Length: 430
Ligand code: NAD
Image (tube, rainbow, N blue to C red):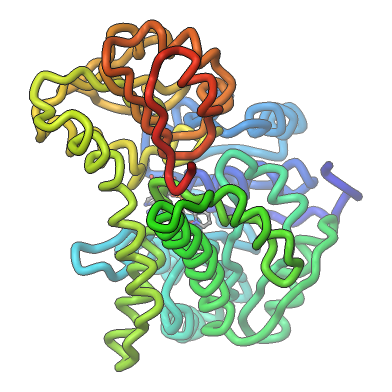
């Protein structure tokens, strides 16, 4: 997995989140000497104890190996200490209320680097920042003899370590000398390098996420049409996805995308387009369709049950997708909010997301069985393997009448729900 040993460089990484920690750990596992910095004391405490503070398969094992090899260490971002010759920035760039990317964390770090980094250091931007940002930051850093390279990250939570070592491409934007130095850090990874100017590199990241979001919203529009013309979206999208020009990835219909990237990055791209005088119609529609998909389970419950006051509803899955504990912009959280506002009694289940949520307003069950027992309706919000492969005939039998199961991820066998005496509803599924 780790490939050939590389010539060791000294590297500093700002941010020990999903991207920064994976970056630091994977570079350390590749033989570089890495220090990961953060400002969150509880995260640092956990990391110093050798514990990954979030759920990411494979990461704990690779981190243990790097710690044992003494190539990885952690420190507070304000602690005195020399930076490495390469500095990665992987701090958050959340949405502002207006939809733009909030660059406060990035600016703080760049300010700190500009004041403290020796000349000839290369700053590498892994955080997703709007096109135009890097050109300005690079001017600021160049005044102190520091180089800047945009290197957007494409890893997927839940498969981050694998994606790091087996990425489809490495995108680098900046001046040729600095880009070549950064490319050297990736010499143990076999992937095409797409190198060019900073703004194009930044836009590759946004365009990729916007395109994937477009595929999802497109599949959802087709699913909604399937409901109108009595067709089955699973069959339709299988037929569509087998066309090699289209591909089958990201064509699953459901209650829409969530997470820490697609929602904020599509909003930020729309915002960037607007303030630059371009009305990005297609992207606006993608965002609108996604927002509408989250209403589907609530609309379905209303149609079948009328008033939801006092109705016991099991919500299965809290995270925005399986194999992560990330609940940022998770459709499940929004759906729970709507159910509570309608007066429903919510019992939620998630194999890992429960640990990160402060659930004062609803109950959390320890097992799927506990969540479903006595519930009149259930909504599948995350396609966790444990949820998709459970014994749904038995689970449905344990529910209370009318045993309505809304499969927001089209991951259940409808026949099993029906065998248990329930009514199955999917998204565009017959
Ligand atoms: P995250 O919220 O998990 O982690 C960000 C970390 O930065 C936090 O631990 C925070 O405490 C730390 N931080 C904030 N200010 C700091 C400072 N001054 N010095 C040091 N650390 C500081 O965020 P994430 O999900 O890792 O995302 C980071 C960036 O990568 C974002 O721009 C995101 O859009 C992008 N990205 C994320 C993913 C993903 O799947 N999560 C994938 C590709 C790109």
